[in-house]
Amino acid sequence: MTLGNAELYRLKSDARRGLLENDLILRRFFEHYGAQLSAEEGKVLSQLLALEDNDLMDLLIGRKDSVAVLEKELQTDSFKAVLHKLREK
Image (cartoon, rainbow, N blue to C red; front, side, top):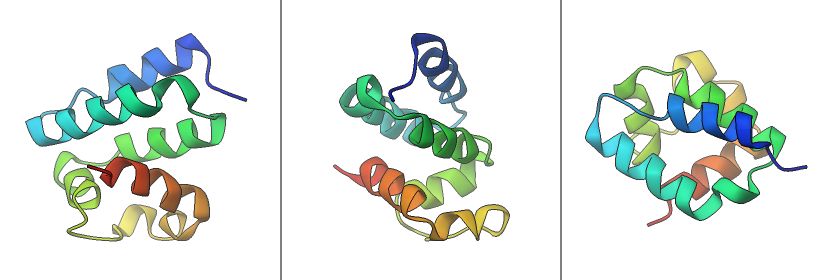
């Protein structure tokens, strides 16, 4: 099941960040995958977007594969899949 317009709008609003690099990566992600995001992927994105800007950037560019707050979640297949999509060039 894909996300509804309201949920997608909320995620896009939450994706507006203080770091331009994060904004660019997240904008590209929504352009490619926004229309087909599942509810599970939306949940993963919501958790990622709750991170501090620098922690999020470290995950997005692959500088780190984990952050303390989401260490357990980042081991799941759904988190790995979303991170993979976010890291695509």
